[in-house]
Image (cartoon, rainbow, N blue to C red; front, side, top):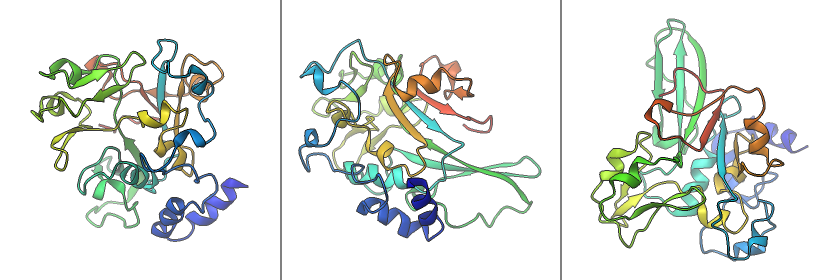
Length: 271
């Protein structure tokens, strides 16, 4: 039933679709975009089993979180980007998460773009591609939450740190905006926020997760291309996906960072 509603909405204008998602009129989107501090998140039903039972002892080595993006499902609607911008008031031109479009013509030429970070979706075709287009797909990008994060190693003041449960975060009170972490990140997910004057990036909605809620972008995705959960919970969806015979990969594995962000259907053209 839910997918019928989504398909009906997607057949209409994508801008209108995104507005309806943010307005909560799309099935399942009610919990997706509650700005940080806007309300008591504990009032929302728990989405990550057992998190609230920890009663303040959230940081635990018993939990090992993973994020999965299914490229074969992503439709490039931009809902995830809009939700993130709404959640964190990200300045214009800056992106904690964004969606890239990959276009391949029949000569195997690859074209990659991400106008406005994918916030507006991809409603217009590229007009500068001369040959017939063979394939088009979308790749969301966000923090990889590396097990061996380069950004933590280079921070001269200890502002970028790693929690016991694997989240790589930024202490904005200590950050001096030197930009070393921005340069060190092999995935280009960091930037200097012009308003806070500190480093900024995706946090996998740490404030929501510790309340037992899924990241905002996971909640908003109309085709369930984003998954999040605890790998130490064998009943979690992410555990089951990563233990099935899918083609699951990480970006730039040769860098040795060991990302906790996994992609289903990752293509060789993705950079």
